[in-house]
Length: 342
Ligand code: UT7
Image (cartoon, rainbow, N blue to C red; front, side):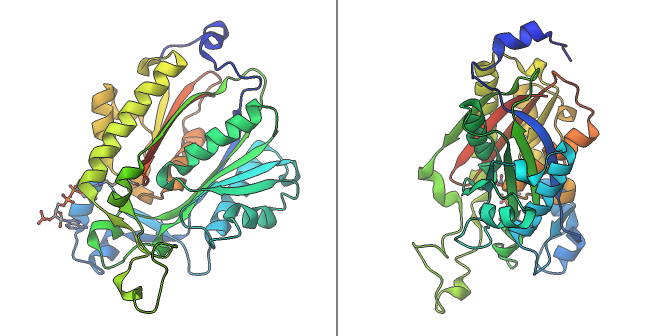
């Protein structure tokens, strides 16, 4: 990998007043491991089909009493410890989730109370699997403008509560978990160099939960129709996922004045190994440039890239100056890519 000097780095850093760096990361995965073998006993599927079509071997499922905010608070506590920052120093909490504890208050507010972040402003972001990068970009803007000092960004989802466990097309894909990153200004690091985001609401109905909201509130009559569970057109979603993640990766690289050869590690949304292989192919990079964990956790929605970021930070021995490309895709449709200088 090409080594960059500080001078070179400054040429393509965003011209913000204060860059936003990752000060620490954390994650939480529930204890219970649901294997493909277990799913074989629940729906008409096989371990072989799931492994070869998705790359997933097992996923974590949260306990009935364990909420999205419980998982997010555990990930947050790990990130605070990792960064040696106290909860009182956190000035904002942004939680990306599509499985909030409740419609309101926000899951971020519950996390605030659970970790004792007394001085934080708290709100949630809804961008499905893209939520963590959307939240990171919001945090970056607040830090760049000098409005906020230390922001806790969370991606947390308990998808097991919105999965139709009788639908083999979807139930084999998803898992529960949470990831966290603390963002703040750090001298000598470019932090988040560039972000590219996009949405296409006209394709909302290829990946969505049609019921349970104001459009189709849950009633005793429609509960059997499972409207409040994930409905997905897999093939269409697959196609758009590959295109959007390739396009946004190329866009964000151009924005930062970089090429893919400058990147130390790519951390993608963990939905399907075949999607990631297709992206690797189109970006002309080897698969081992990607940090992968979907074999162990499946698709954990907003948490996926956050958990993978934490894992990569723990295991890949990133050095200052290393350039990390994060790229996501999800319901909305939504997508985003960010480049972080470690
Ligand atoms: O996080 C948001 C983003 N989500 C995604 O990115 C998901 C994107 N989509 C995908 O990953 C893939 O489309 C799936 C993994 C969901 C499906 O893979 P596929 O290769 O596109 O399969 P398919 O939907 O075209 O289905 C192929 C066959 C069908 O049978 P027939 O009609 O060919 O007889 C399905 O009924 O596989 C069948 N099938 C299954 N068979 C065994 C679907 N799900 C299963 C299953 N076990 N779990």
